[in-house]
Structures are given as C-alpha cells and as structure tokens.
Length: 83
Image (cartoon, rainbow, N blue to C red; front, top):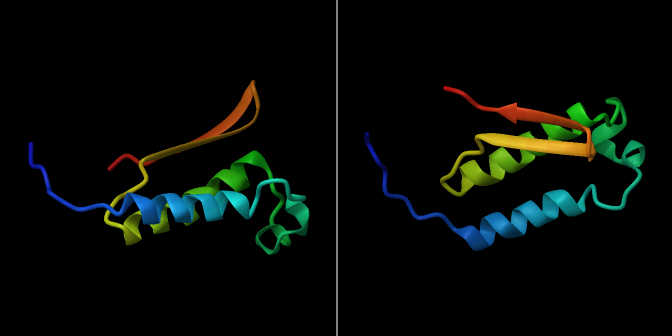
C-alpha cells in the first residue's frame, strides 16, 4: 500500500464547511439561488453539498469520499466515491 504524506489545513476546511452548511441552515431552500431552478430535494441538497464540500477539501489537499444527508430518521441520500 502506498501512502502519501500531506499537510491538511483543518482550520480552513472546518471554516469552509461551516460556511457551506450555514448557507442552508435555517433557510427556506426554495428561496436560495442554488435552488431557483432545481427542486431542493434531499437528493439535490446532497449533490449540492457534495460538490461544495469536495471542492473545499480538494483545495486543501483532501478528497470527500462519502456524504449522507437525511431529511428525516427514515429518509436519507448518500453519495459514495468509488475509484
């Protein structure tokens, strides 16, 4: 197994993750520009967050492999990266 040593700026990642979540938290999603033309279903919100969070992580030398978003205890949507 090959390992790669890399420095990850956790402070920057955490700050950007909070910003991404704060953009949605407590908001009426239909009013947000991201969801003007796309219905804010749990699937679409998951894809939006995956794209945003993955970019933040890649900009900081990391990669998002899995995200799961739930809108109730029995309904969730998951994206997993398999390469």
